[in-house]
Length: 453
Image (tube, rainbow, N blue to C red):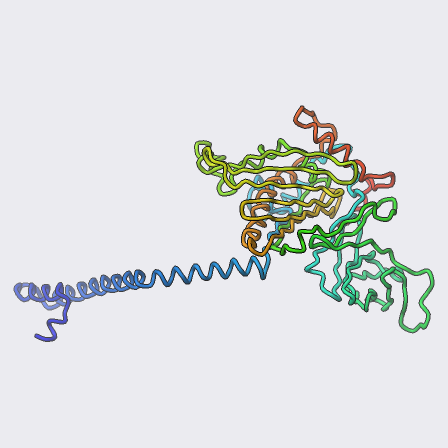
């Protein structure tokens, strides 16, 4: 009787029932007991699992929250966010998926009409060619930009330098196997050394360096998290200087987003002067595109509302003031005030004021080829709102990606059908013309001597 009391009640009842039914055989009785035992084990196990979850739900929630906090801290302060999109990853959703999609994208780009009367592809100004964080002391980078093959290196004195890539001796590429020696770059082929001024100062087997042998050096500045070189078709010294903005002294680096864009360089900063496009392209919510597909949800999900004005200065800069509000129903949320300064053809600084503190974004646009630009946004913020700064890296990228989608398929229109709201575009083009000069390489000549194969 003691053992029988330990059986689940359902099994006990089944045994009693079978005892009362002499017609039921031993085999059926065994099957019923087995099935009931299995059923009760499953029920009891489920109850145990459920009770364990209920009992430990708080611990599991705390563990998940703690892990999430650690990840946010890691990406905000230790390992900044890096979001990158290659050329073929944006703006080609209209091309069907398949193993040959890359080939079809290349064919679409090759058949694309570029437009007429395109301006020179490499204007005069400062251009970012490398990331400060990536160029360690003693390291060498091979850079192809502005129709040039370049060697960028950081001397043992900590200074970044840039020279033409090819050794004047027998043409070895200094950026491929070259070695940093003090402030010099050493050729990998015959170990000729060139100092910071580009002059050959030593070579093996000779006590005297050859006279008049040198490589071209480029003016270099480090600011906004990048290494910038001065490009000028007339060979002039820099027409303006760039220095660190005061905010960088107190702000920390939160990450960057990077895009390759198939467009003329002029079209990218022109976006700032094209004020009407803001509400046409960037009003849809970053949270979801359901509002675009189902307009009835537009006000519920929310939308971005933009106001902006663009003005040129009398020098190499232009200014833009932007306000952005996120509207849900009739409520204005998340207001952002932005001051934008365009510095020359390839450098933009954005200062953001928000309810959670200030942010700073440095944009660089560098021509990799006549119709290929590398665009990078580097985000900075104070330490107290670093997690928001890290999140801003992606938010800004998602907004910019909408423009890239259009740029990657459009053609350049030299004489647009201007309307009243386009007056700032006309003004911008006149202002931007100052960065071209008499000896600027024409677009046609640049196409005849491309860096790509």
